[in-house]
Length: 352
Image (tube, rainbow, N blue to C red; front, side, top):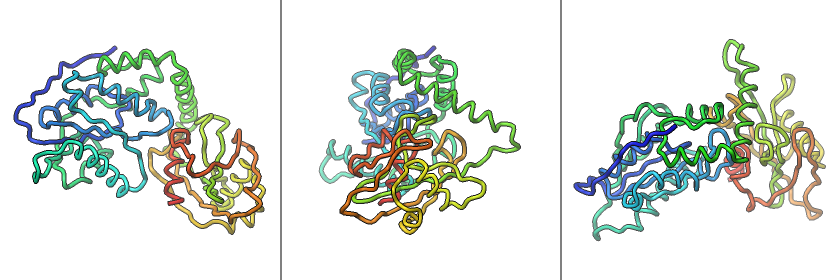
């Protein structure tokens, strides 16, 4: 079920004060562990930034930041664990914002361990340059990059597929991680995600006979008024029970603007005439990250509806069609861990 590699580190002859390792660790496997051990050999401290933090549980991100942090810490001796700093890292669609967030997080940790006055801390970036997803290694020219060879060609994506399709713990995990995943098999969270997996597989199977994988086009409505945003609770899979922007697939016979207004009115029953909604559109943006949806390649067109403040209050709404509920939420109360797919990032990009 699992295997444990005997890793150890030495404190002699460190080349770096800090080595930074960025990953999602979904799940944390022996390949990740080997990179960290290589970092411990070369640096006094290792900074691990856990990507895709503060996301809802999904097939791509089944484990929370706290759970992944525990997976990592439990895989090392107490002495080595004390030399490891672990911090959450949020996703963003803007590379410059993401780079700045990484820099700020690293700086916040580095300043907690002052070195000799006047010396510049020696910081490096360590990782395994496996494919296009590792392009981030080139975004930090101020840090020397260290490439670590792959350990047994391990990859997290097939591990997740095996875990949710077979209901078994995959090979290639530290013993502590494997034990945690074994216990998780009887949890409500696992049952929910395994149902999502089966739904997604059925959905993909329905178009697998196509000559090439289809690209879906959707629309999403970001409706704001008086410091509130209009959200819905999803009634069906995928993402059943999560909060989302009103939206859906574009019909063959309609324009994008007509589609977003139709979906908005169908899902929220908003008491605002269609011409007023159309005149309230103040921004449009395309979100086309290839990994944004597990349903397949899905490109969404988001529209910002900036409704005028009204002393009579917010327009009445009511859930309909694919939405169980529709409601207004203060912008300050948006919780990214409760929002479907990348809708939190869409909101951030549209209202910034």
